[in-house]
Amino acid sequence: MIPERMLEERAVQTHEGDFTITVVYSSLTHLYPGMGRYGIRVTTAEGRTLSEFFTNTYEYTPAMGLDAKTTVFHMADEWEEELSAKPFEMMEYFSNIHPRCLPAVEAVDVVVIQGSPRPDGNCGQIAKWIAEETVRFGGTVRVLYPDDMDIRPCIGCYQCYNSGFCTFADDMDEVFGQVQRCRVLAVCAPVYTCSVPGALKILIDRFLSYDAHRRVMGGGAAPHQAGLFFGVCGREGDENFAPLQEIAAGFFATAGIPLRGTAWADGMDRKQDVREVPDFADDVQVQVRRALEQTRASGSG
Image 1 (cartoon, one colour):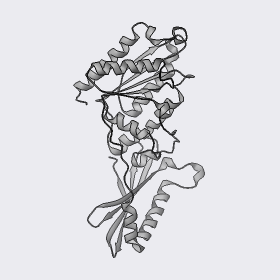
Image 2: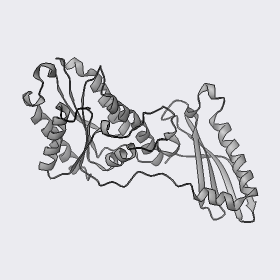
Image 3: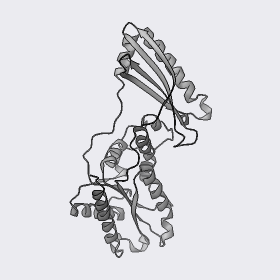
């Protein structure tokens, strides 16, 4: 959890009971330069929290004419006024604000993100190899297809660093639930214009809120998990995978999962079928088995 510093405490006495409004501040400069989070917490005389509100300095653009500190103190004034005048209505209002949580999903050993929009293409074949090796190992697997999911693009609002959740509630919640509980996260992707396909890029960008969730909720990194990244490209030469290598490193760092292995198959414009690449299937499956063995030894799953 994020350490807090109290800025102000207000006592509110009403015919429904006594309440305390506390304004707090947390420095998040260890995450981003100059980032800070302001919050309001309403508690009863017994210390039970009725509601919380948080906002951070990165939410506010220069053109907005607002800032986090002004916003939180303005809201504290409003809550104090409303709570004093209409305590019962405010208590009812607070009771209808439900904290968000990740969905309950069935845990699997390996989650595969198949990043190609072609489910029956070469990345689809790589996903099949991963699944087959997982089953041979005695594990369970789930393959996710970003192109078939409802995932909104990240808008860079940084509101996820308030509560640990993205402002959008869509299929990414299920992705995060799966990733949080798996032992191995594997990604397979083709090179698309010096990057990855659009739907996969959107999914990767949204992992900013997974990073926020880990840090705000106190999860930290997950050294007991293992990350794998497998790629294909049409042109010949390992230099064509430089963009994917950077994306893989950044993605797994954001997810807090150690990147344990990669494998690349180039020249697919000529070869066409990844099954014709010598030893590539063996390389993928060896890395999957090694990752499963490592995570079992570390006590995951």
